[in-house]
Image (cartoon, rainbow, N blue to C red):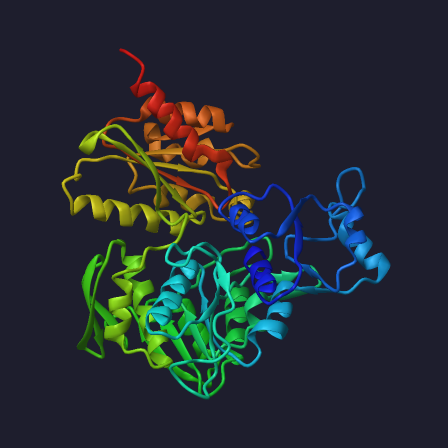
Length: 467
């Protein structure tokens, strides 16, 4: 919604917005754009009298225990008859019309892959518009309109790259957001069970992905992860577009080499080479997906690969928040958005692989996480947590607000796992356990109580305290 607000502002509209406890980097971006942010959902905001209320999917008709509405502004909008729409519908009607939309869908990796694709097209001189669920460091903003005409293809549709989320659109439109986007190029990056608050099972999510497939025209392209059986089932429901797959041994696009330096093969023939600062097999697959999608709009794989050598990732995707100490004995603190067990495992695997290939082979990984997403709060995939944390030497869980027993879930990890009911206790546990050379990975889909800076401050204070 913050990115959408930025697009509306760039299009010339006066934009205000309201939310609760907005945190960086989006709060900083909105402030820099001069977009007024109102705390809370009070009915006094009806006096703004806008031409349109654009409603995000966090808003509902829910009631508090007192019986009062959780979102009184929404009740006032409904009572007054004021005009309102959903974010995805507004975007489809006012931004995406007439553009070649390249949509990136998947349970994991959407933000990073969308940022890769936008950067590839930018380096190719295509000046794409984009809407990304994070802040790509190559651009510094999460959204922009881009050019109204494609300078590389006179008379062709301008390009727009969008992160295509399967979560529902709004309380009044329970379709997945991505069905509004009508892409001509659609990346299906991966698919597993998530969003247990709105989907009953994996089959229900697969059905929504097939709704997306149904919207891609015959002249379009589906870029599909060949390693995912769930996506095979989606395609078997029917598809009407060209398919290019990646990842598996028999895919159209495969990789040969380590994730930080690999050749890109198209049907077995080398067509490009990627050497970059990113690690992890997941980012190697993300790169293949972005290269295959860019090729659909005329960017050669070799050119796409050259662009990726200058790709700086996205904020909160293994973003180094700071280091404490000196040289090889320094402690590094990372911020990562991982919140699903598979994403946690992927993040930690990538770091472990990178450390194994460096001089820091003996370095420890400390995983600090909070089960904050709706799926994790419900405990639907809690049994996967010990598996997801295997690459870490120690794990620290913030269990505040959970209805399930995190200590019991993690008991198979023995003394490698610690549980804390508060952020204060969690910080103390991590600081007490930290040693020179450690890598501390903080994982959450929220602000995590500013734990990153708190850890850096406490660790620095400990280092400066005489023994």
